[in-house]
Amino acid sequence: MDTGVHVVILAAGKGTRMKSPLPKVLHPICGRPLLAWVVDQALSLGPAGITLVVAEDADAVVEVAREAARDVPLSVAVQTQQRGTGDAMRAAAASFGANPDTPDRVVVLYGDMPLLTPGSLTGLVEAQAQAGPGGMALLTAVVDDATGYGRVLRGADGAFQRIVEHKDASDAEREVCEINLGLYAFSSVTLAADLPRLSNDNVQGEFYLTDLCGMAAEAGRGVEVRSLQDPEEGLGINDMTQLAEAQRVLQGRINAEHMRNGVRIDDPATAYIQHGVTIGAGTHILPCCVIAAGVVIGSGCEVGPFSQLRPGTVLEDGAEIGNFTECKNTVMGAGAKAKHLTYLGDTHVGAKANIGAGTIFANYDGKTKHKTQVGERAFIGSGTIVVAPNTIPAGVTTGAGAVVTRGAKIEAGETWIGLPARKHASSKDEK
Ligand code: UD1
Ligand code: CA
Image 1 (cartoon, protein in one colour):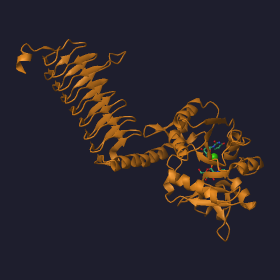
Image 2 (tube, rainbow, N blue to C red):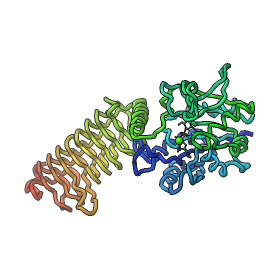
Image 3 (cartoon, rainbow, N blue to C red):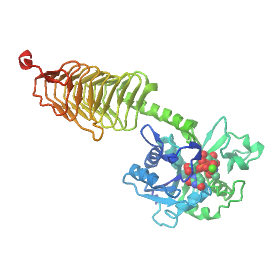
């Protein structure tokens, strides 16, 4: 009986080339850690469980993986010394090896490869099913520069033979441009039987997981090789340049999905829309905007150019945020506008309110953040400063340059002007 897939994510590598105090797999890409993108890949296979292999002291890494794994059981295997990918798999084996409930197949992913698509991974699992009893499958890519990678060696008939690591390869073998990506689907029974047979008799003195592929071929078991149609999917993150490259690709995918949903994006190359943003159809995003993870934007809104929507921003239908305007933890009601040079922090703006150019909601007193409410159809004059906490009721007008001090007692429909702002004598009659 087919009991599905167990996924192992290898993430115990040191990541020294990042030259960063942050663990490699915690570097954010489009607003979420690299590892969370990989856990998503695992989830796309509908796994029965996930094992994460980490080095010691990786609590923060484990926490990110647990959150991303949602309700799929996640086991953690600690690899105390980084003695190679085969050794890392041995550390993981305890979580699936002797367990009779282990799914039939074990898929290996790398914690630093965020671009693989569900289609490619499903292809890998299907290939393993075609490999016959105890067979395996691996993903490869054909690249121009294979330096550093394991090479896929084939016989004269094209049949897979084994993988040779760059450092162990002869000059002739280094000419091969089909590389091993390090992603495999194994039969769990065969994997558990073969792992103890790995040796570290090689140039690097490491236990190579790749040797399992050669063992399978030698034993006459099926080895199915699938090559990525788009080698870009196989990009692994080792340094800051590759991190930026991966972000560019994932940003492109995020923006493409919004456009498929009817969002108009003038310049996708400068639309920095992080993961997990909701945008309604008919909304227009102008150039050079930064929109944080979790922001919610309704339909028919306009954002930009040069706007920043930070966490906690909600734009209701038809709201407009214009140039050099920043929102943080702010709700803009339906049809409300703040079009120029404005800071909206911890603010709730009612429907159809107009926030004039250069308005600042001063939310921070040096110690704590405070909230401001602006009622429906309020008209905040250019250059107004509202010191929080404050409540500007519906229909209120402030004059240009007004400074509304903390906790002002303002009633609906009044006009307030000056510094500090006071009620304009005949304000109610004026309306
Ligand atoms: C490995 C493959 C190589 C392939 C390359 C693709 C082996 C022996 N070689 O190279 O054929 O072309 O991946 O990128 O498998 N890791 C651990 N513990 C370890 C070592 C590595 O968890 O002791 C993890 C790393 O965090 C990373 C992954 O395994 O996610 C790959 O490690 P890396 O050192 O980049 O791969 P290589 O062994 O050089
Ligand atoms: Ca290595």
